[in-house]
Amino acid sequence: MERLKQRAHHFLRNVDGIIKTDIIYLVKGGFWASFSQIILSFSSFFLSIAFARFVSKETYGEYKYILAIARILGTFSLTGLGLAVKQSVSRGYEGTLNYAFWQNIKWSMLFFLSSLGVSIYYFVNGNRLLGVSMLVVGCLSPFLSSSNLYSAYLTAKKDFRRQAIYFDMIGNLFPYLCLFITMLVTSSSAWLVIIYFVSNTLIGVTLYLRMLKIYRPNKEVDQKSLNYSKHLSVMNILSGVASNIDQVLIFHYVGAAELAVYNFAVAIPNQTKGPLLYLRNLIFPKFADRKSTEISAGMKYKFFWLFMTSLAMALVYILIAPYIFSIFFPKYMSSVLYSQIFALSFLCITFIPADVYLQAKKKIKEQYIGNTLSSTLQIIVTFISIVYWGLWGLIVGRVIVRLAGGFISAILYYYSVKRAIVKETNV
Image (cartoon, rainbow, N blue to C red):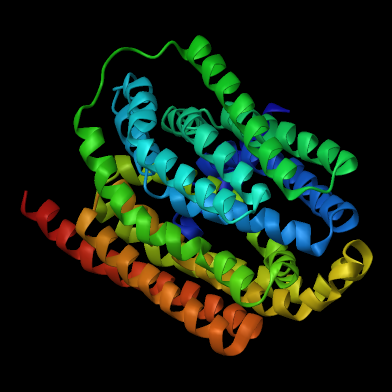
């Protein structure tokens, strides 16, 4: 057995030399990421089948619309605290987690008031369903987002096992189960929203307290982290609106049923977000610890292999999509072609290392430029495409915008890393 391990280690080291990446580190951290994502992907898939079977298109469209409104309003809180916690905890300031928790609660007051205002608007206009939903969203979302900061803490501690078990599996499977039971009892979108936020908040707070008991973080707080998180939060406002405006515009211009068709079209391709987040989390500590000269030396290999991987993913999905929908989502066969076209957005995976570099090295100006350009482009393209071309225009537009955002990140990376290398060389 020991000899087999040595051979495997030797093989992985040879692979390191080819792709210029610490593959052993990725394998060790990636095992738990892969395991949790397999469980989570299957669970999400079965939940989607349940939505398609037990919930009407109109109800599902209303449910997704309310979640989109909640995410848009949520951008006006300190959404950048997660990355600030990762930065601080990785340098030993573990008390920043608890500090960030309460800062997020305090700064979520604007989010609460905005949700309350939207709730009152719907009540006044006779829509009790949306009124109750937004009231629940406003009350629970601050605690949900604060408790989920424990994920950033675990990433900084490189505890990928607990992050996979707690944040990914338990943190998602419990709400999934609650939503499934709710579907069997009622078809009300308001109840689906209420159960979604209650279950997520309950499990989030429970796991946050569990993590504090296990690690017992020290009291050291990085006061500068709040200032950094404010910069990140301001950047996230525009990107948060851009990421969710499509749901709102489809609901108002096309209808709830078409919003359901759209969400099923993008659902499976969007399942890559979980593994990609883990890829980011695995790369982040490495980039934070290394000099720009070292990072730059292997970056072109990372770009090449990620491009080949993303291209293979897109082609495979385009081939199998019709069979997936015909077997599991026959009510949504109209989503197939939309979903195949949207799969081309996988190619933006190529540029993930460039984006992570800007975050890990706290390149605030470059992040402002990248977020502003990408988000503005996405909002403009989304609005024009939906108004003039409906779902077809939106799907094509989203692919173009995603690829454009990747190229913007790559350009900003090359501009930034060249300057950093010059500084490191002159030191």
